[in-house]
Amino acid sequence: MAKPDPMIRYLSPLVGATITTIIVEDGNDDMDETHYGFIIEKEGKRYDCMILSDEEGNGPGHLNITAKKTKVNANK
Image 1 (cartoon, rainbow, N blue to C red):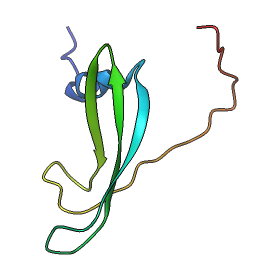
Image 2: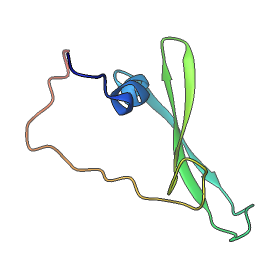
Image 3: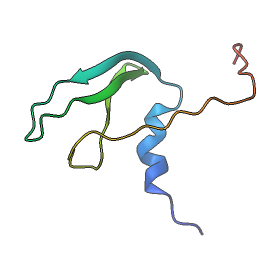
């Protein structure tokens, strides 16, 4: 039996959620760097999603967004 992937469990709140707001946090850390993220809402719960270089928040990071070539069915 395959061991569950913890990253899939970690990312699962994103599935079916709606991005409601963009977050911009001005540099309040030692390096005075601006951090970015977004707020999502799903089933009455709210999640702050920050784009960080690591789990400890040691600086801003990168979120790769790639457009898909297939059309999305808006009726789903």
